[in-house]
Structures are given as C-alpha cells and as structure tokens.
Length: 329
Image 1 (tube, helix red, strand yellow):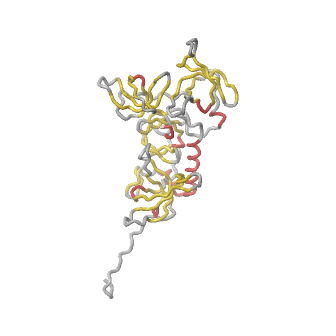
Image 2 (cartoon, rainbow, N blue to C red; image 1 turned 180 degrees about the vertical axis):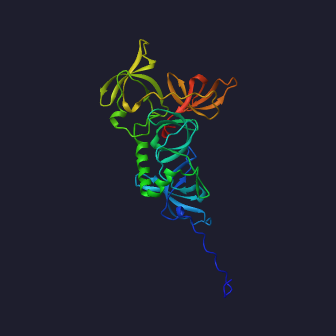
Image 3 (cartoon, rainbow, N blue to C red; image 1 turned 90 degrees about the vertical axis):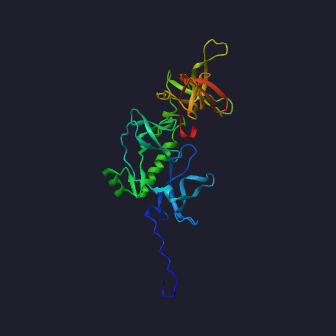
C-alpha cells in the first residue's frame, strides 16, 4: 500500500526478446493441408484483448489481398509463436528423419521417406509424397521453455552468432523463389532449374502427361513416350495406355511441356490403405486423385471417391500413394 492508501500496480511482465514489436518470428498458422505448418511473421503489438499472452503478427509472405499487396495480419497466442530458427547449413538426412520442408511460403513438418541421388529426398506428409532438394529441408526442432529441442550443434551456434536476421530473411526469400520454380508438376524437384531444362524432353523419353480436356477439375496422369519435339516447347507424344478409336495403335497427340512431367520415382505401396487416405487410382489408363471412402471386407478392395465425387470400387494393386505438391492436393 502507498502512503495514501492506494495499491501500487505490479509492474507488467516483460516480454521475452522474440515477442517484442518488430521481432521476426515463426507462427503456427493452421493450414487445410497440414496443421503443422509455420510461416514467417513480424510481431506488431500485444493484442488489445484481456489475455496478455496474445499478439498481433503480420505475415511476411501471406497476403490478405495480393493484388493490393496487403499482407495478412492476425492475432495469435504466444504458444503458437516461436523465435526465427537460426540458419542451418545443408546436412545429410536419412530415412525416418523428422524434418521440415519449405514450400508455398511455409515450413511443413513431415519425414524422410526415401533418399535419392544428388541430395534429393522423398518427403512424406501424411499420405502425400513430395520431392525436395536438400536446400529446401531442415531438421525439425521444437521451441520448449526457451530452448531448441534438439539443441543446436556447434556449427549452427557459430552461424547464429555471426549471422543476422537480415540474412535469414534473404534465405527465406531464396527458398520462396526455389519453391515456386518449375512447372508445378507433381514430384518435381524444388531446387531451381532453368526454364529450358524444365521444358526439355528427349525423343523416346518415357514421361507422364496430364489430360487437358474439360474444365480441368478432375485431372489424371497417363504414361506416354516422347515421339519428337515440334517446337515452341511442344511435343508429339504417344500414349502407352490409350488407343485410337479404330484400335489400330496407340493414340498420339501434340502437347505443351507444362502438361508433361518425368515419371515419378518408385515409392513403395503400403500393405494396407485406410479410410480417408489420399491416394491415386489407376482408372481408364491414367492415375486419378481420390480418397479412400471404405475398406471392403476382404481388405484387398476399396471404395474410393474421385475428385468429381464419382465412387469407384478398385483393387489394392490399382492404388498408389498420392504424389504431388501441396498446391495440387
């Protein structure tokens, strides 16, 4: 009590440095595809609500209105906010490692499913598989009681001491550009390549091509062979599963490179799928996106819903894990 008999207010609890206005942080922003996705943001201010553990942040790469350039601002609890992790040098990963992959302006949690050549990895997130270069991956860490778990090693601590937030933001920008590079084909490497290489397919190459008929709401991918390039990034292709109307041979068609991709790498098919798994079904000669609606009693057959809501009964051998970028799934 003061000498005048009035209580003295307790001093406000001081926020940790990373929650101070202007600090660059990562926020656990709920995503329809993956709830464990984190996006870079800036602390703007404490929220005006009665809960003093909430903060207003402005995202650096998410927009309220992209046309006007207005970036998304939102209020979050402090438990959903963590410091910006220090830059991590490229490292070797092994199958089963829990990692985060940078794609579509955020870091998504998953695990390494396969190790490929040239520092490339198959990244698994739920029932989806994506291909990433090592520069778009980092070891998954949790911010717990003011410390990183697992702790940073000596090389990362050295980077943290000498590096600045500005360099980290440059790294985020580089990752953003790399994640958007390419044609958007599924299981395409996230490392940047030149446009010429992305669109270059040699005569006789085995590829997959997507159907471009209709409104594009239910795309499928079909095995095909490059017959020859015809110029302007267009190719004459021969389907390997679709035949001509008179059944005299396999159908040939001219297509642009945006609808052609290399065959996806082999991914082992699990012994059993379960309800709500996102998969692809071999149907009418192509691979179509679908969801397991029901596992039938003999465990070797399923009912699946296609993207156009048609229901289809299929065998286990006609299914494969869905393979695609986050944008496509």
